[in-house]
Image 1: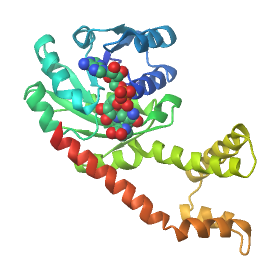
Image 2 (image 1 turned 120 degrees about the horizontal axis):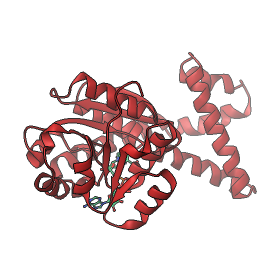
Image 3 (image 1 turned 120 degrees about the vertical axis):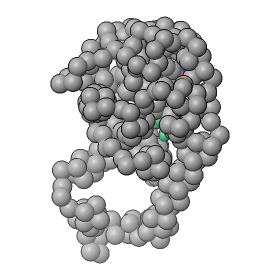
Length: 275
Ligand SMILES: NC(=O)C1=CN([C@@H]2O[C@H](COP(=O)(O)OP(=O)(O)OC[C@H]3O[C@@H](n4cnc5c(N)ncnc54)[C@H](O)[C@@H]3O)[C@@H](O)[C@H]2O)C=CC1
Ligand SMILES: O=C(O)[C@@H]1CCC=N1
């Protein structure tokens, strides 16, 4: 790391924490500076054994040990988790508080954790596990440049980062990139089903689909062409791709994506109200 390493505690050892911490350790973040808590022991044991991070079933223990606290529980549990931390953690206002929860606004965390906290909201996604994450970030005005550089570097270690202008934008980024892996998996599974329906076994169908998805994503990254032009390169006039693409366009794939993203944004806004 070029920024000074810090002790970082993850509260909640679920899917997203496992992806981030797995990716951080792979990218060289010192595992003895990482702390993880969770109520039940099974996930902690797995993380301790495979990643050699510190673990505890006591949130306050890891939060007290660290300089940075990453709140990684479900939004509906956030108020209770924060209330307990407020009682049990000394000097919360001296620690950098990071949250990866969808929806909940910084203003709400001030009610939960006290008005003197400094906070960064990160919206990551699960491909962080394999170093291909996409994380959106937004900070309150108390966060200093060192904090921003440190968190940017930590999340750059597990993929790409994008600072956004405000929390409304973070809701949108979450609906595209945070939720996005689910959309891609849904689409990939549907292609796999299409191939199996025509006689391929699931394993071979999966190989075709995942390798094609990887190739398309890598081409998109490597190329300066618009995505639409990359699509055209595959679509020979009078050929087979044109027939397949016609089916997607006939079902108005743009409208489907627009509706999916709007529905996810709306839920982020609802969660901001609810939790
Ligand atoms: N899964 C994803 O792709 C993404 C999730 N997020 C956010 O990350 C957060 C966590 O989501 P997931 O990891 O998917 O959920 P999860 O359900 O897999 O993990 C949550 C973990 O918190 C633990 N937990 C429950 N009560 C707790 C408590 N009182 N103290 C400490 N830990 C407690 C649970 O045992 C579980 O291991 C959510 O707020 C979600 O909005 C953000 C971006 C992507
Ligand atoms: O589904 C959710 O609410 C979280 C946020 C983005 C991905 N998972």
